[in-house]
Length: 292
Image 1 (tube, helix red, strand yellow):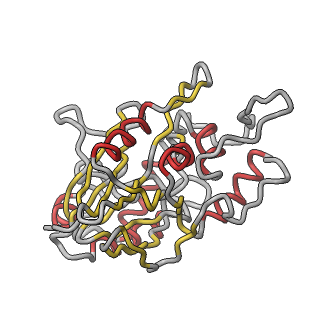
Image 2 (tube, rainbow, N blue to C red):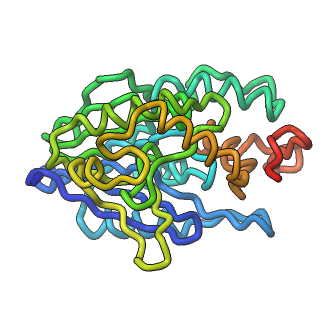
Image 3 (tube, rainbow, N blue to C red):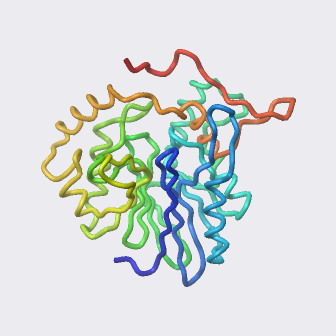
């Protein structure tokens, strides 16, 4: 049981996404993990509802936000990192392999020449195994590629925030068919997380619950090893890869993949405004795979 940090979750039912505020209550310092910028696909309007919930919690507990941590460039929601930073500060950070993701999607979207796939849009790029602090609490960034090349997990005082790499035991694992994804890498990354002490608390970034239960986002390494439907103990890499590739072939493209990634590779910044002062998203035609 961790005793030095406080974790507060905020669940967004539109994207099935969980944002976390992790804080050192003795020093009143905090990190926000995977914040959401609300986006209405039909109107093209963004809003701050989800960020406002985080801001209210931060203000209520008199927290100073030091870090805004992204586990990866999400394909199912827009990042609220830049808006959150504008309101309360903090350094926006992601794994250093974001450069590869940026390079891929700069080509796909034919982004403006001034967009550089060098990670400079973020304040800090974590290397695998790099440590940092939230108040007096040490945290470690762990590279867990497979869902995307840049996925990171954050190990903080007996808890690990795994992004999309693992889901709740009855949901399983993330897809591995996005550009740069790899089911073999995903299996090895999951086993890196499952090698943590059995009592380690595990927080997932999404939950897509079966009809019989409400959304949940907290489990343990021991529970995952015993019950995860995709990667519990005894399932081999070859078995997992065969299952994952067959399953991915049936999945639809996420609804918000086209708007979300071109914002998220910019650390939550909207594209530069045109001469009329309006930002526009680009929709490449006939480029993403089509699911039958």
